Length: 161
View 1: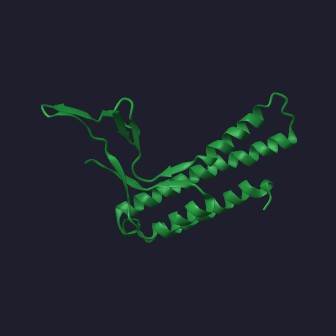
View 2 (view 1 turned 90 degrees about the vertical axis):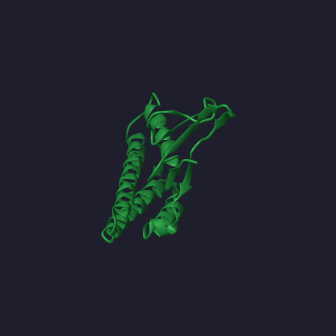
View 3 (view 1 turned 135 degrees about the horizontal axis):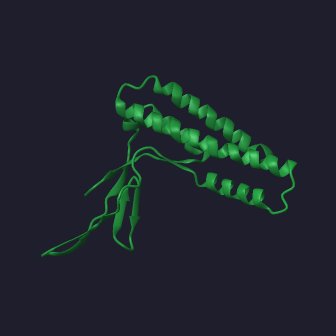
């Protein structure tokens, strides 16, 4: 497949996976599975929206002069953003090792330092991936999306030790 059709192919694959997840959602029996499906559907829709801008910018570059290079710069930025695109279905954990702080799902920053008469302790939470049994019928779909499209999908929960 030529480079000209790469993003069109990616759009088609993502749209197909979104339809598969929508169809698979019908068989969900509990709220947790419904929420995972809904978040994946939303994440795939965001990926599709980001990806649609790339062929539009390519068409703009092909049809209109770009003396200032703004469209080319924007196209390069969109390609880089899509290459780093990631879908988070459950929890997102950010850790700042310099300040010993962490935050979960973009909320407030919390200190991981605690001190008592025994000394200072640093205790960061960690992410634990869900098992295939917890994912149910979504597990093979997620693996297929990761391998065919190359989008990172994080399905982990925060655990405090």
